[in-house]
Amino acid sequence: MARPQRCWRMPSRLRVSRGGLAQAFERVAKKAEPTYEKLVERIRASPSVTPDETGSKVGGQLWWMWAFSSAAMTVYSIQAGRGFEQAALVLGTEYDGFLVREGGIVYRGFSQAIHQTCFGTPGAALPGNDGRGSVLRHGRRSQPKSPRS
Image 1 (cartoon, rainbow, N blue to C red):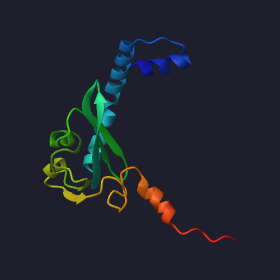
Image 2 (cartoon, rainbow, N blue to C red; image 1 turned 90 degrees about the vertical axis):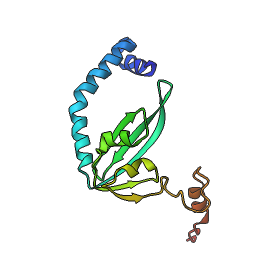
Image 3 (tube, one colour; image 1 turned 135 degrees about the vertical axis):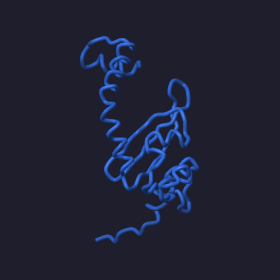
Image 4 (cartoon, helix red, strand yellow; image 1 turned 45 degrees about the vertical axis):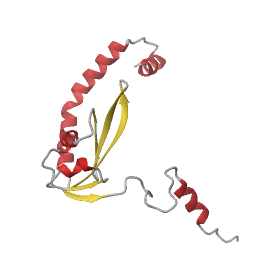
């Protein structure tokens, strides 16, 4: 909470306690809850969803930020786990649309969905990819130079 405290203090010159910020964030989250629930309903109704999750520390513990994207929107959820139960909290257990996903077994629990496996990172399967962007660097080097005028 130290960073938000500094950010708040800079433009307003007001001092805010960590507890005060926590209470304010909690009130905002409570007010946003109905909107979030509507977004979850919309993602569940989407004909195609691409889910992904990535680990991040929350209070020193490993948690997961889930992202569920459709053509129109993305819904995020931060959860303590990385299993089917957590994914189903957003998608629902009965999701029956297209699920464009990486190979993780988590998504196999969506038995009514039509599964399309994707490569997690653009260019991941390309020859010469060392995971650090070398494909792009190599791709630029291998392109023919334009003729001089």
